[in-house]
Image (cartoon, rainbow, N blue to C red):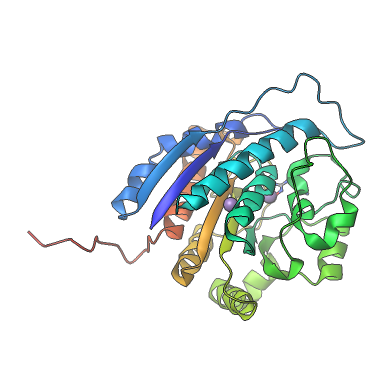
Amino acid sequence: RSAGIVGAPFSKGQSRGGVEDGPERIRAAGLQRRLQQLGCAVKDYGNLTFEDMSRDEPMGLLKSVRAVGAANQKLSQAVQAAKEDGHTAVVLGGDHSLAIGSIHGHSAAVGELSVVWVDAHADINTPLTTYTGNIHGQPVSYLLHELRSKVPVLLNFSWLKPCVSAADVVFIGLRDVDPAEHYILKMLGVKTFSMSEVDQLGVARVMEETCDYLSARGKKPIHLSYDIDAIDPSVAPATGTPVVGGLTYREGVYITEHLCQTGLLSAVDLVEVNPLRGQTEEDVRSTVSTAIDLLLGCFGRVREGNHLPDYRLP
Ligand SMILES: N/C(=N\O)NCCC[NH3+]
Ligand SMILES: [Mn+2]
Ligand SMILES: [Mn+2]
Ligand SMILES: [Mn+2]
């Protein structure tokens, strides 16, 4: 396995400062070393730099449209390059609006793909259904073919074309979905495993059904977009929009272990880690540590233990 890490210190998809520090905190906690200890090759492409938009007046309710469009265009190119270099892309956020560029770039490299969206939220508001104007609550609507008519022309988004079919998306962890989002999910028949289903079925069955569902649609490369707020705030509190009743640490890691063993995992976003939203340093440490363990699960770490193929007892 080979990981291509792209840092995306971006926060303009939402209004809380600090999420731009996510990439550095995750790196500082040893992501590269831990991946290498698994025998994973690692290329760290560093952090993207995002130009300051002098003027970025709201477009209707939408906030920071120019900044979000420009940042995601850059990210799309970076992810496409990482994929063309043969890596599994690892995008470190930054807020979840980054999934627009990440998934677009992934699709530019591999063509049709499936998306597993692990999140307390559906992030499928359109520019006309959002009531906050924060684009990190809208990325899925910008990516779906079926919602193309619901996304108006936006400044700095001319590069973006919808690239995902609603039937190729699976949500896991939902527990804070707006009415308009719920309507869209039902209208499009999107496969969802809310926290009710996680409770009802258990995470093993959720993952079995997720993988059966995706393989029935052809074994496309999987894009895992993991919002750290899918994990319960008791474990991952340092995030912008915490919601009680989330995934346990064990459920969160099981999801990545299971997706890894499909052999189809092609790109991962790990977003919404916000060090400033922790009340204590332990809050931040726990959140960052969980983020790293989720990523390690994507690259073959299992809880029974791992050893390198060339290991020989002394
Ligand atoms: N973390 C968030 N999305 O994943 N916040 C925005 C969505 C709130 N409805
Ligand atoms: Mn999200
Ligand atoms: Mn990607
Ligand atoms: Mn979320």
